[in-house]
Length: 102
Image 1 (tube, rainbow, N blue to C red):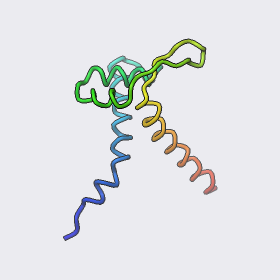
Image 2: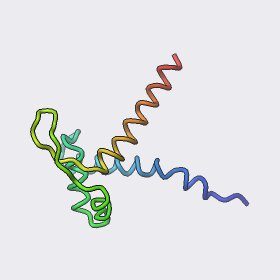
Image 3: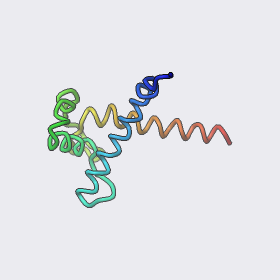
Image 4: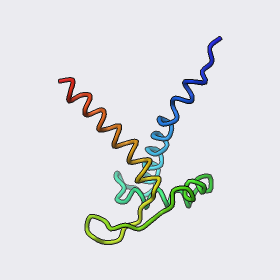
């Protein structure tokens, strides 16, 4: 009888990506907006609000950086390194696949 173990292990990145989208969707829904203005700040607030995510905030701390307008902006390492990497890289690969296909 074959084990499903390899299927579960292979979908870890998929689960993290879906979790990121869920955090963004829930945060936007709770604020009553269709798009969040500062994702890093929103992820930090979400991690602080929900104790189950406290370890993620320790591992990927919040930090301040300059925004596009030059003003200080809060960001989060999980958002900038993990979430953006997964979602933008996946989007770029999908675009490349469809563009090269034509």
